[in-house]
Amino acid sequence: AGTGLNKEEEAWLSEPSVGGVVLFTRNYTDTSQLTQLCEAIRQAAGRDLLVCVDHEGGRVQRFRTGFTRLPALAVLGSMYRNSPQQGMDFAYRHGRVMATELLLCGVDLSFAPVLDLGGRSVVIGDRAFDGDADIIIRLAGAYIAGMRDAGMASTGKHFPGHGSVVADSHTHDVIDPRPLAEIEANDLKPFVSLSGQLDAVMMAHVLYPEVDEKPAGYSDTWIQTVLREKLAFEGVVFSDDLGMFAAKAVGGLADRVNQSLR
Image (cartoon, rainbow, N blue to C red; front, side, top):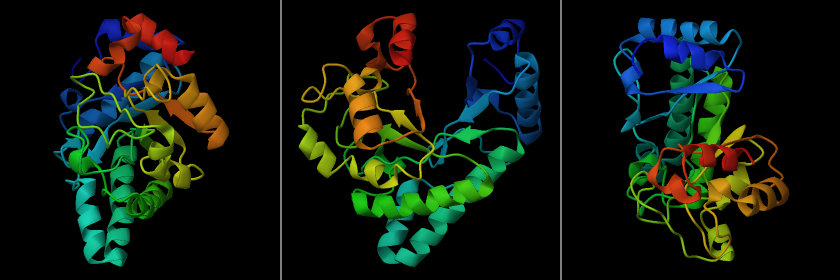
């Protein structure tokens, strides 16, 4: 809840079913405090676990004071359109600097990069590299290389694509009515092209009724048939935040967790 652990949180962390922690701005004061918090988390757990954060740059950068102020990914897309070489160079630097600074404080993983198409979604907006899937593929490839060279795994999000629907899944149900063929021709392209480079993907809390009656994060069709079988993806699959409005489709929090695990 804050910048240090309380007794209840220490007890939670000691449970063997806890695999990791996601940190937010409320958990941060400065780099020294963050380093101590990451150490305390692992000590309370009594084992290694993932300490994670959403640290994309722009409006989604949880830690600011003492960290490089990273631009939103859309800045890299604009840069690429003016100079592809410069855009690729800065995408690599962005990923490497982001990962290096977090790793030095004990944070294992930033959920990045965003592979959604830009230009339509309220919640994605400038978090996307560009509205062109081919540009996203090139920039994200350079970004992932920067992360990897720093020593951090990559997480592509939000599978199979959150960028083509306007609504925000934090506050509304999000429904994408398009057929699978249209999604494959657009939003899925970055995930398909980069599936061999990504270490993980994060699911979208979006319902695609032409593909499955369940939102993607709860969908056997999306996770098993499309992601595992068609894309042959063997990495980690993360759920997006189960506290989000659009995640309530299968019931209360315990139901959401169990459905995601299944």
